[in-house]
Length: 369
Ligand code: ADP
Ligand code: GN1
Ligand code: MG
Image 1 (cartoon, rainbow, N blue to C red):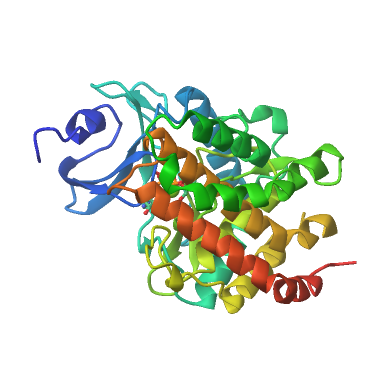
Image 2 (image 1 turned 90 degrees about the vertical axis):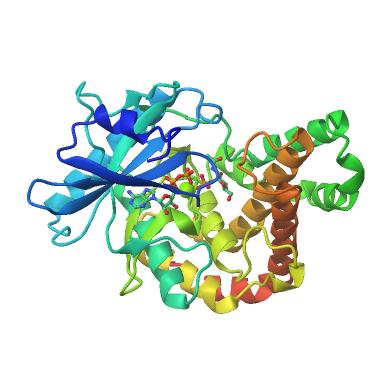
């Protein structure tokens, strides 16, 4: 194992039996540091675990994040067991540390946790077929139903105003004004694009404040690579990345599925002609989410299309903000990475705008009463 690999120290603090025989980094998330650790057990079996350092710059109160994750995993596990639905299935579980807590502090600081490795599964950055889209949306819809009866005041707001789109808009305008890295000159068309859409940014928040959309315990980061899919069957097995579970709106959850599943292009694709709004994928997402999530109101269903457009704009604004601020939030792997990501998001907004009537026609059929 390399010298600066932190895993040896971290695993020694978790109550895992057997011998550590290897570890590797997982590169796919933008926020936390994630590793797989393989352990050889006494009987020769090899078992894998996920070790994750919570990003303390993004989550300012990591123990509060852990409290939420503990509560949500326990809640879901108990329910799934009661329903006897987990025969052969897998759920996300935290492993205890030797201290009895569910996290430890690493040598260089930082809070680490350990999860069971969800076996036989993978995550997709790009959805390949409508079954995957349906399955992923169904999993997040079921997740919404499963956590629907956790009291809102039990769940800590791990990142305040995470999906407050008007505040994200405001922040982008401030950062553009400050122009701390002299990058504004390259992004005027993108800033104009956002300003032209200022009128839509507060729509969902306004509906919530008017009591027309319910606040629920929501996942808040439902991108497609946050659900583990069975490699052999494309069945969605387990929702992961629970750090942003907070009180919120279901529509932001559905919207992020649309953002990350309808296009065959990568989130950071430079060739914008590859970005697409694939109607069959949208239909599979909407059907899967509505089929699984029995708590959705008609008001929520009526805004499914809008939510995909809004969150694509919101995440595009966040990438653009980070670009202007000098890439301090999202992990980046090349120059202009956040700007490339912002551009794909804005392209998707345009494509959704063009397809809106057709998308709305499909959603109309799903409204219950
Ligand atoms: P981030 O917040 O950085 O996105 P995630 O919790 O989503 O972190 O983890 C990053 C990646 O690690 C996931 O996309 C998935 O591929 C993998 N991963 C995370 N948890 C597990 C798990 N319990 N079993 C298997 N793979 C996992
Ligand atoms: C981050 O952690 P990850 O990669 O699943 C981000 C999301 C963004 C997403 C964009 C805590 O998600 O909000 O939508 O990148 N998570 C956090 O790809 O900010
Ligand atoms: Mg993730």
